[in-house]
Every structure is written in C-alpha cells, then in structure tokens.
Length: 60
Image (cartoon, rainbow, N blue to C red; front, side, top):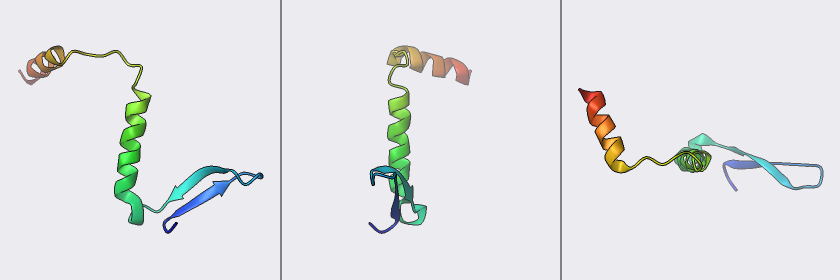
C-alpha cells in the first residue's frame, strides 16, 4: 500500500506501521482521536449539565 510500510517480526507478523503523513496525515488524525477516546474509556463520566455549569463558571 502506497504510503504505509509495515515492520514485521522474525515470523513475518506485522507489529508496527510507518505512515507517510504527506499521504495519510488526515487519516492519522482520526486514528489518534480513536486512541485518545479508547484511553479515556474508564474515566468517570460527567453529566452534561454539570460540565456546562463548570464551563460557564470558568468564563466569569
């Protein structure tokens, strides 16, 4: 695949990829967003009303 190179282990299994940002820069942003969401899965939830109230308080 143009713009992507795979790093394989000694058994030929793909272990990593090198992505050409000139070709797939916008795709990398999507991948990064997904990784951030995944890393925050177990964080406590905040109700929208509470978050909105806190944002308004920070503005003042």
